[in-house]
Image (cartoon, rainbow, N blue to C red; front, side):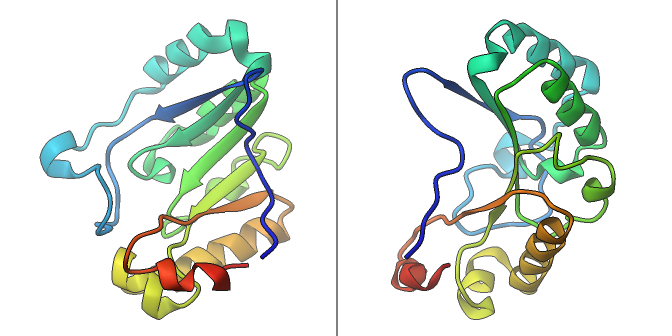
Length: 172
């Protein structure tokens, strides 16, 4: 299995996992963020900007990872990405389930986003969709292909559970 590290976790860098909203379009079986407990909150761009600026003094050693919920649902995601790059963060990553991966690729460039990290919990629709919902595998794979075709870096997030551990060696 050929696995390549994307965002490095080291003593010389920091990783800022920034939940910019709690809203999500899926109901994955393993997810800890749900509307009953966390609501459907979206941070306004002014709040996102203030937090990014607050961490910008350490930005050259800090990797920023935008997540949620589903960050592609945030109406100002592209502006937040551009600001993070402008502030000098070491790397910019967006974690996504890939289902609504519709227009973000036309709003940002590969120079602004180091990685789109796609949540894919199985090498087949049968395994993945049992965890994430029907049609999620095809939507996610389509989003990965589109991102790669436009020159974006991509990576996978594979949440291991008893429902998919058997399929882990099949992920490439």
